Length: 325
Image 1 (tube, rainbow, N blue to C red):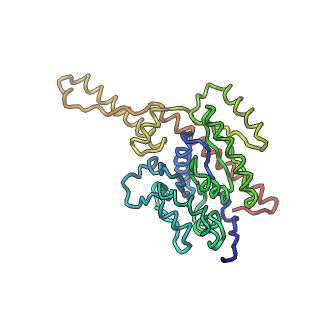
Image 2 (cartoon, helix red, strand yellow):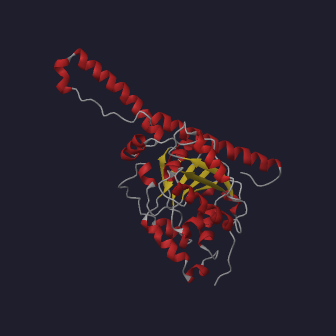
Image 3 (tube, rainbow, N blue to C red):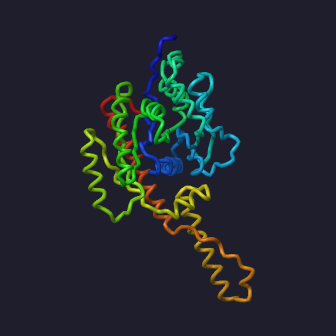
């Protein structure tokens, strides 16, 4: 067995693990939309799908792509040191992507096998840190879309991340999933003491339901750790979410198209009124969600909040002489 080599996590100061113990809390949508918005603002962003469902590709509209290896390349990059992360460049401007999927199930069995002792770093997390460190200097932000299950992958992500962002709905099952993250964070801090909470972001939320937010704050205060609640909430918009997935678009992209389509529909309707005899040759564009713009604004506010959090933290670290990018 080789001597374990501890990776230097200093280069990974802008890695976010986006995680909840329950699925269906808009975790993947948060990764896709926030990543793309910060990329659009000039940051170089890498989004890595660590979920065996592999659904992050749907948010980016990456279906039937030849590069989609369902996570097998990611497994090889972690397990075999000579293989780099299989990064797909520019799925959006300034945004690169690593495919996840069913192939990632292999990581769990590998983590539990005796073969892990033969890895140069002696752990799955150490090898993932090594693979990320090789590309980290190319990015201003790395977002890890973590699975709701598969404890080995969750622990691997938390062992290399600097920040923990927890999207959650306000139903009891989602809040119970949130509670499972705390013990994992505490364990991860044994080898990754710089790991900290960015916060909890409430999703699928009715903006008028202020009582719900008070209850979530009260619940967070009982967790025995400092887990802040993000100021931004992501509203519930079933039609916008459906249109985004169906069209392979992010919220701000859908909002732009919805506004354009609205204008086009008005022109077509006006033309029908002026020339009723031509009605049979005018095809009316399909209506898109009218809430897309509001949903896009929510994601913009969350992206801004995350950016300000990073800037504030790094400025404070610089003033105290600690590591900062």
